[in-house]
Length: 154
Image (cartoon, rainbow, N blue to C red; front, side, top):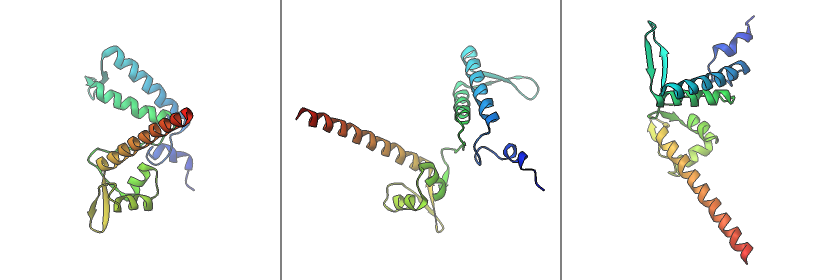
């Protein structure tokens, strides 16, 4: 019989939500790192031989942001900027179905590349689509507010 109690600790946070212990640990670690960075202007840790290693502030902020997501109970996936995503990965990032994403690709709303008979979506193209969509939504909200004010004046 397999002991399932060990499974959460063995699988990563890309495959499952964090446990209560991991959430608590991430929250405390994020706070400790933020305080250390504020005091030292960066983050200093001990290296292999006990030698001090400085972590640049930008990297420290990235670590704090990652820990913040974990402390909120979120699953986390790190994706390098130059990454090519499968259609399922891209759909998951947009929180849409794969068929809907495929429709967006066919309509030319998101740039993609064909690799054999498969489509791959550059992360940069996906992020550009998300940003443009957010801007369109923001503009629509401003237009709706303006129309509401015009209607109230009439």
